[in-house]
Length: 160
View (cartoon, one colour):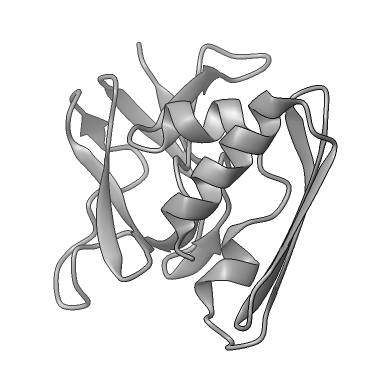
């Protein structure tokens, strides 16, 4: 069962109103518990040790997962006019396109809408994360080559 099938299963269970679903196959077990159409807990016991399944799915909220799978979510930072750019997917955060290339962005750099901020590797795919606004990079919140979670803050941008 791949990640898309699991996501579709979570969505189906969430909409069905069922409180708990357990699926057991030879190579894995999955349990989905829901309450009021929000997935509360997912336990994946993968006996074939595919590294993606156990770490990729935990405490997933379907509505935000579906909406933000392909774009970066930005929200207003508290106490300031700054914008926080959050990770749209889980994976490994990279500040440069390859080890021998310069970083995409630096603190203090002026960026334009559509500029690449970083790359997040997920399941051997490198996803370029583009800026949704113009502004100045105030802070980079994640170290290069670090794992990131879904919706984790990555950058603080001053749009003025």
